[in-house]
Image (cartoon, rainbow, N blue to C red; front, side, top):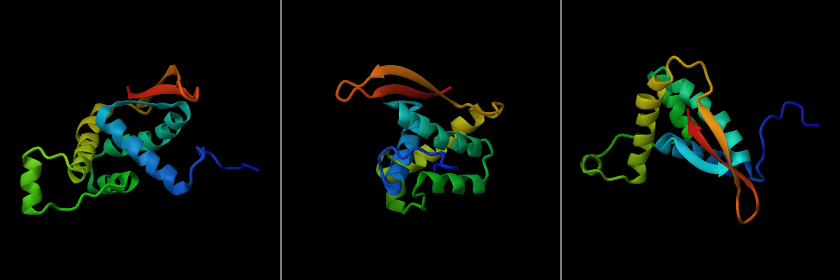
Amino acid sequence: MRHRKNKTKLNRTTAHKRALMRNLAKELIKHETISTTKAKAKELKKVFEPLVTLAKSDTLHARRQALKALGLHYNSLTPKEARKAKAGDTSMYNIDRIVLDKLFKELGPRYKERPGGYTRIVLSGNRVGDDAPTCFIECV
């Protein structure tokens, strides 16, 4: 019986699915529109929308919850890393900072008055190799 099981497995282990959703959420925050399969987009919506709701209230606790949900590393920079960051270095460490800042400084205030429904899924046909239904998921 499937009572109270409301998430799709996507033929992956739990850790793999969690990593996949974190990566898709980071990319959606960064680019605001991504192309993926329909099943992944529906699951991503369940991960992304609570993050935007967190970002509507820019508090320390909300930032820490978002860090945990996205699996980001946001430790203090050493002076050498800080110089690289100012020079425009986009290493993985700094991309995490960019993603979190964009979530709380752009997306949160943008949807301040909106009660929900921050994403839109637009179907775009089927993939050539395996005929999987693909779509674009974008921020409204």
